[in-house]
Amino acid sequence: MSELMVMLDDRARLVTAVLAASQWPEQEQAQLTHAVHPHAKQTRQFVQPFAAHTAVQHVNTLLADGTAVSELFAAALRCTWPDFAPQEPLPPATPAALPAALADFARQTAVPTQFWPHHTAAWDEAMSDLQAIFDTSLLADFVGRLAGRPLPKPLLISPNLVYPALSTVLVETAVALHLIIPPPKAVGESPPWPYSEGPDWVLAEAAQALIAHHLAAALDAAPERRALLTHAAITLFLEEALGEADALAYMVRSKRQFSLPTLPLVVEDIRDALEAGRSI
Image (cartoon, rainbow, N blue to C red):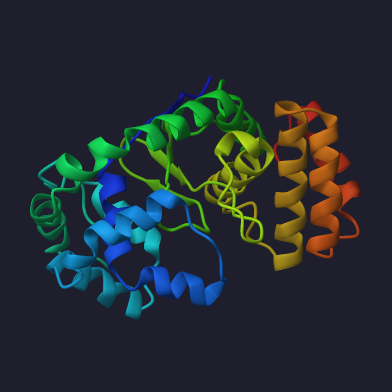
């Protein structure tokens, strides 16, 4: 059985704070106008005086160069807390000076000591919600069965109440796979839902990121075929995790949203494969 744990990682949280001070929030809103979690607004207000800090300048340069935001998390998660001493090679796109800049950002802003302690309730609620949603290692085991091989490392799942607010980040280090998940997106003018009000969304989001990573070779196909396999697999995972009703709702929604008329057939194909002990 693959190991799965919900945890709060301060290295990742610090990256979200740096992103809050950077140009990322404007870029994200340009992609899709959306409400953000109240804690994201509070974080951004707290770190705005440090928008010229070296760590923020590094991040803005990387973003302007088209570097994926996941690379920033990868750089931080390959370092120790709180000194950000690198323990593994950094992603090629990130400058060698970034870890030291992150450590200095933490010291100069005092985010860990003067900001986070006043907002523990928001993070405690997020942790409690995710622990209830991921109460077993079902996700890790399911993706292992899809691939025909178990996950090579423990799966660590962390909430992200700040940035990026629209996408789940997956980072692999030498010791773990990290999934950093934002809350469900807000609807209209309402605030973002708690994780507990969208367990189907949370599980589907986590499954999609993990499937794309662990089955990258199997999904190296035409985009439509890749989408079919991914959404079919997520449908079956939701069936195991939440039941038939949630799985059917996801399949119907995905079939329409992504124009996948053969999705029900692919769901049954993958079901047959799993029942026969085959990978996809």
